[in-house]
Amino acid sequence: MRLSDFSHIDESGRARMVDVSAKPETARTASAEGALVCKTSTLDAALAGTTPKGAVISTAELAGVMGAKRTSDLIPLCHPLPLSKIEVTIAPDHALPGFRVHALAKTTARTGVEMEALTAVSIACLTLFDMLKAVDKSMSITGVRVVSKTGGRSGDWSAEAR
Image 1 (cartoon, rainbow, N blue to C red):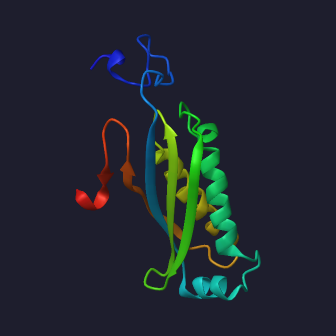
Image 2: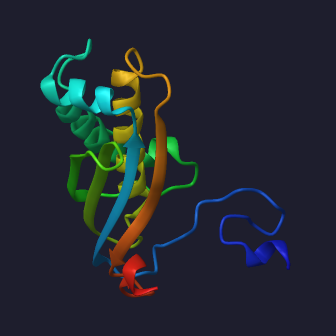
């Protein structure tokens, strides 16, 4: 494989942002998911609002939205996008036990929003971890992945359709 075969590397091996200026702007969406696994007692305390840092779920949802908006600042060579929607939802799951995190990102742009959805989920999970680490040091973040995307040249995709 030659260096010029890589989209983010130029002919001399230097990192570069991909030129998407010739691509048409299209409506695009992406959804991602992940989970924070914790002790049952940690989940119960968070739901009861008795953890030291307060409103765990709403704070983590807001952090996920804020993180998605900063994706291009965090991921080298990622295009800044005009996001039209970021929605982060966190649901308790006693079967884990822990929290299921979902993000939906939307834009009309020349490139997709998968990274924004993944960043939203990751930051929300990290915020949950930060807010709960005083009561549970054994937590883990798991299963962060894109579950669907629409729009763009490659079309629609869903993890369930694999």
